[in-house]
Picture 1 (cartoon, rainbow, N blue to C red):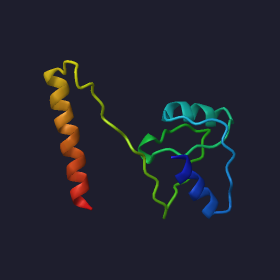
Picture 2: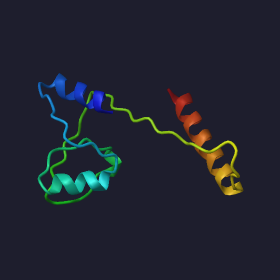
Picture 3: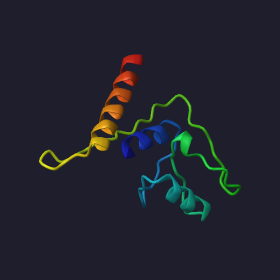
Picture 4: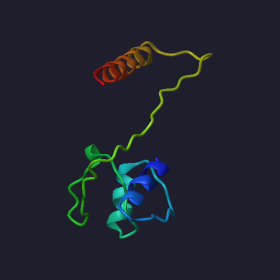
Length: 98
């Protein structure tokens, strides 16, 4: 996501200096709350921490790729197989909406 974030920042005249990258919103919130930089986070990860100022980024498409992985030669439980089916169908349906 670094290239996407850099592109968004550059479009508004800001060049970020990356010191640390993290994917966990809770850790990002803690770092920002401690006064260590800024963070781009998904809107759903928004927390009601009083010390943090949130700004919504509009008119820019930030995407994150996620993957569902499993080992081909290992046993997959019935629950894991059903979960995989649900995830695949969910994202297939999302793709059909566009």
